[in-house]
Image (cartoon, rainbow, N blue to C red; front, side, top):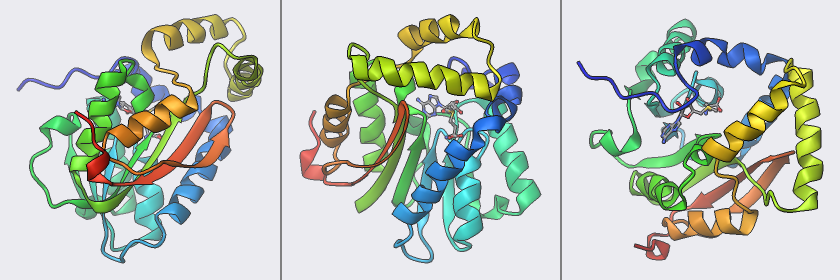
Length: 238
Ligand SMILES: C[S@@+](CC[C@H](N)C(=O)[O-])C[C@H]1O[C@@H](n2cnc3c(N)ncnc32)[C@H](O)[C@@H]1O
């Protein structure tokens, strides 16, 4: 059986190291997940949530634990990341509430529309703005009218001094996480090649043009910003 090729950086070796790599700075993730719970906290008790690029399953875990009747469509194109997500689900007892889709969103079979979607640290890997808009458009299509998106991404205008100041702190944070200073140049190189840093107004406008109302910024941790936005189909372009 043919398998979806894993996105760059999420092969078996990187997947196995993913959780450990960020363990020392997990407070950042916990903060984002806590706020995500609050952003989605007014949804119905039986809501359906689409988690795109769910990775090893942290966001599904946070939501499944606190909203015991929510159901999840878990989309993840990297088979090794999905295997860890499934293991987490088995260990914690929320497998039965999940539909697991090993692949990209465009190949997800028809399912009833969702009340909300999460895309946490995923869309910045789509360097082409057109592909990124299509990614968000695919999410909008899978949401109910006024369905809510929570999105977190690396972002910012890399040509500004403000961004450079935050980037310097970011790399000190990576050292706290355990990265050697010699690795920073490799990370910068990988960012230039594989990550679409967009200035905030451009990213907000791109999300809007994919069929969402004005995104509301609710969190910033150095270079990671997070927004929520509701579907407004008439704003979709193209
Ligand atoms: C940095 S990880 C984040 C995982 C998880 N959301 C979290 O916050 O821990 C990014 C994940 O997005 C997946 N991914 C990359 N490109 C994707 C795409 N175009 N569509 C869906 N998932 C994608 C990767 O395989 C990876 O598991």
